[in-house]
Image (cartoon, rainbow, N blue to C red; front, side, top):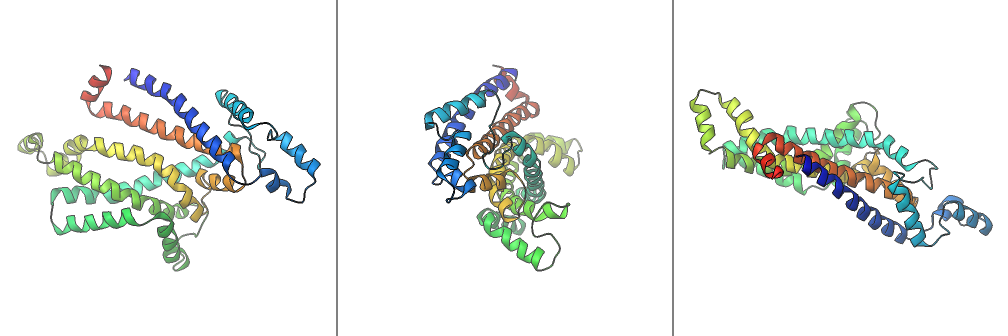
Length: 309
C-alpha cells in the first residue's frame, strides 16, 4: 500500500505539468486582451504598455510559460490579473463552497440510488425494477443546465420555498445539490443494481442466512461490503466530475464556488486564475482516486496483497 501511494504521488507531478501546459496554451489562444478589459479600449498607448509590462504580458509566450512553470514548482500559482490577489487565496476562499455542493450532491445521489438500486436487484423484472430503470434513464438524460432552471421556476419563483440564488443558509444548497445529485444518482443506481445482482446469488450469503442472520444484516453488511468496490469507483470518479460539473450549476444558481470563479476568470481573460483553478480541480481529482485505491485495500485484503506484490 505504501508503494502504491508513493507511485501515485510521483505521478502527480507530470500530470499537473501536463494540465498546466495545456491550460496555458488554451488560455493564451483565447481571443481578447486582458489589458483592454482592465483599462478599456480608449486608454492611452503608454498606459497600456505600462500595464502590459507590469503583468508580464510584454514578454514572449515561451518566456511567460517558463516563468509560470518556475512559479508552479515553488508552489506559487501566481497573482490574479483582474482581482489583484493571489490565486491560491482566491481558490481557498471559493473551494469550501464547491466542496459543500459536491458532497451534498453525493449525499442526495446516495439517498436516491441506494434504496432503489438494492430494491431493484432483489426483485429483478418487477414493477419496482421497471420504475427504477425509468428514473435512472430520465435522471441520466436530463442536462444540468435544463434541470436547474426548472427547479428554480417550480420551487423558488413558483412557491418561494427556496432561494433563487446565493449561498445563505441550508435552504440555498438544496436545489443545486438536487440538480447535480439527480444525474449522479442515475449512474450510481445502475451500478448498485448490477453489483448486487452479481453478489446476491453467492453461496456465502446463503450460509449467512442459514446461520440465522436477519435479511437486513445480510444485505446491508455482508452483501454491501462485497458490492461496494465498483460503487466506490463511481463515487471517486464522479467527485472529480462534480467539481467540473459545478461550473454550470454554480453559474445557474450564482453559487460562489470554484466553478463560477472559472467562468468569471475566463470572461476577464485572467490567465493566472484560470490556470490555477484548473490545476486545483485536476489535483483534487487525482487525490480522490488515490483515496479510493486506499479504501479498496481496506475493504478487500486481496487487493492489499496484489498491491504489495
